[in-house]
Image (cartoon, rainbow, N blue to C red; front, side, top):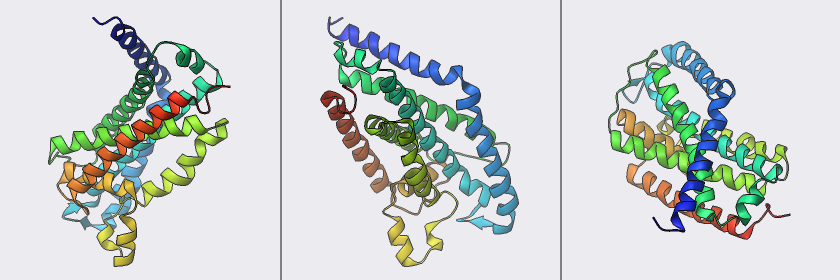
Length: 259
C-alpha cells in the first residue's frame, strides 16, 4: 500500500469510528428523541388530522407525509451531528492537532461528514420502521430513494460543517437550524402538496431547496412528485459538490480554526 495512502486510511477509519461511537454511546439523546418526535407526528398529523383531510395525490394523508417526515429526520440529524461534533473539536482545540498533522483535509472532512451521514441514515431507518406500524409503505423506485436520501444527508452534513467553521460560540450553532432549516423544512412540502397553493406561491416554493429533496424522496417511495425528478437530483448533486469544495477551502485556509 502507498506510504502516503495508509496513514490517511487509518485516520479516516479513526475519525469515522469516533464519530459513530460519539452518537451511539449517547443514543437516548441522539437516536431516541427523533423517533419519539416522529411517532407524535404520525399520531397527531397522520391519524387524527389525516382522517379529516382524506386522500392526497391518490394516497392516504399518512402515506403522503411519511416520506417528508423521514426526510425531515435525515436533514436535522445529519446537520446537527456534524455541527456539534466539529464545533466541539474547535472549542476543545483538538482540531488543531489534525490540521498540523499530515492527514489530508479531504480525509478530515469526509470523516466528519460520514459521521453525520450515518446518523442521518440510522434515524431514517428507525423512523421508516416505526412508520410501518401506522401505514403500509412500499418503495416505488429503490434507486431514486437511496440516491436522494444519501445526497440529502451529504448536503446537510457539509452544511453543518460550514456552520461549525463560522460559529464562534455554542449559540451560533443553533441559529441556522432554528431560523433557516426549520422554516424551510415546514414549507418544503412535508405536510402538503404545492398544487394546493396559488400559482404565485407555487412558483415561490420552487426556490426552496428542501422542497426538491422532499418531493424527489416522495417520488422514490410513492411515485408521485410536484417537481421534475431529474432537475431535483441534478440540483442536489451539484450542491453536494459545491459544498464539498467550499468545506475543503475552509479547512485549508484554517478559517475560524487557527488561533
